[in-house]
Length: 403
Image 1 (tube, rainbow, N blue to C red):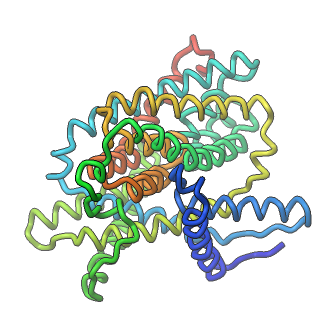
Image 2: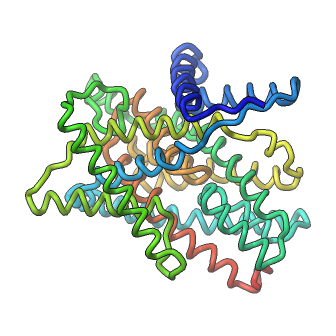
Image 3: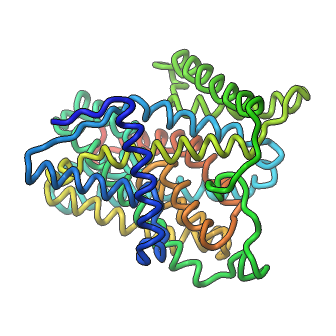
């Protein structure tokens, strides 16, 4: 067994990102279908590690201690990027998209439970391979997996939850690009309208050079650090109460309060370009570590019925994005980018959604509306909606899953 320490993991993550960029640049298929660079590089490394484990009985373990801080830093920058004036402008789109996403949670669980019954499985398996792990990700999946095991007697729930969330993370990063490619053919892109794409800002163009100074960088880094500390403290205060939320939601909330509070008081104006720079670095490294540390052999251990459930859920997500998300959100370029983002967090996580949208906007042009709506819905509202929807399904006796 090879154990990578903190520094070895950081080196490996950086190389994964460089590998991903090289692959997307040189492989036409990846570029044509807008596969995010961290996904391309991370999956290649994960497959290589799977091969080494299978052929040489060799396992490489990654130090994942950086993963949580990087994820929280990313969500802190999402909060620091959200000013109330912009949110007000996108209010209607945000509300409509939230309703769409909540509707899909209902569809996801109904499909999971219906298929589980048809395959002769415990209906809880359908719920577990529905919004619990796919829209919820590893964090929500782990929490509810323990509940299903302890309160509902589903012994294998924690293991199935982690494997299903891993499956969703991989597929969420793979289907968003092809879905967007299909939809973009039907609309005019910013480049098609203006001759040349407008200069994107923030998360839309993560590799754009930005003019920064040491002092401004320290100021922005301080805001991110304060968001992490205060958000973690707030999460600890409400843990175990009816208001309990994941730590990253609290961090994002503190970021929003900091950004708008400092602005209202006239004390400090957040440097958006610098915030997005820090956010993109955190996002890229987080995804690289997450994907290269995937235990793909756990997916191979899933029973065929569970794989069928997850495969159908992936198909349903793609169809919903094409025929519902795209149409309801306006059948335009912004709607196509939103559909790619929905695939990302509908199967995986908000970082995957942002990576999907970056891959699309890097090629076709910017979509400010999508980058305003998706982070707020995917990082904040989705967890609240998902918790309500899961409890609703567990409380319905006619579905066969009530206690």
